[in-house]
Length: 212
Image (cartoon, rainbow, N blue to C red):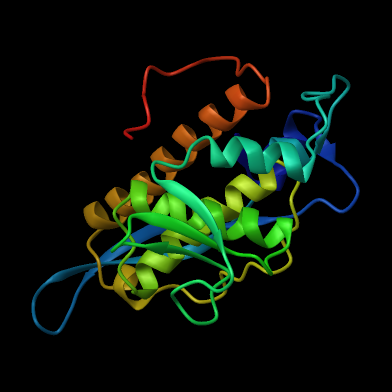
């Protein structure tokens, strides 16, 4: 995955495809001192575009992704058993990690696209130990889910990152870097495993292994 600002792509004579989708990332700015004397980090949103949204002479990836193949790849990366249930143990969630049973529950009413979105978020929560019900954890889990969905051409309209978690705004620069680093690491591990399952060989492979 390669993210760059619009001007950076244009300087290399690489242009947007029709209906290119922008990605908003956090860019750390100046630090400041709170009233209690502690250091805090200010940051701003930065609009970038993924290389998959660029028009290039050579098609970077000609392998078609179906929802079923992507779902199969995601299931292969689950560190716990996945089971279909009539209703999950958490109200209003179609996909839910049940920490007591150490299983991921999928509602029988869940459509494939919703299953993919929810399943990635729950697998990410296990990998990053971010399954506690906080705004920051939801932000991190949904960030991984969004990036996976974008990479494999899944619908993105239901994702909403307009609100930055309060916990993130109160962190030091080092803490912000650490939290966002966990998201990037989780994304890299999951996509590597998914690519293997759907027979796509990445250009470079890391030696990381998903801990089961």
